[in-house]
Image 1: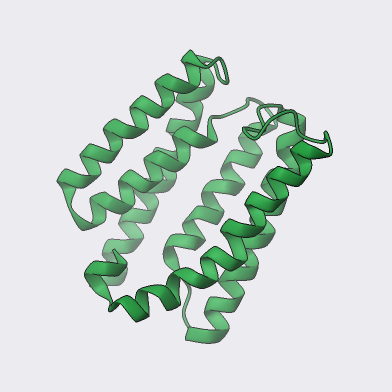
Image 2: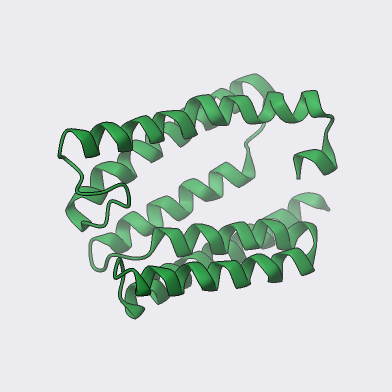
Length: 168
């Protein structure tokens, strides 16, 4: 999307804060918690262990959203909906360990769909493969993958609706 909408410099100015405020801290958090034994694995397959992961990612995303708002005077709609998806997954985690991998890939499919419906469908296929692999690897049950997918479809639908409204 950045390449399509912005210059390389503008794309980097958008991506570097996401890298510095979300991606790198989350990777460091995961590695540190696995090395110290707080997390069993990098997947954070344990529902109890996931609670702290969700909270940490949410704090990072909120920090980025505040930074983006202060810097640009606007809300980053994509990151706002990633936060909403994260909160929905956190709530569902109280009842069932929904597949975060499947959910985020379905949301990415919605992001691509808002740009090009063919790319959206292609990524939806990738999301389905991700869901299948989560079951094959025994990280999730079929029910948990469908729960993650269902949550992501709802959040993605609302994102697409809002995205259409803000474009007009």
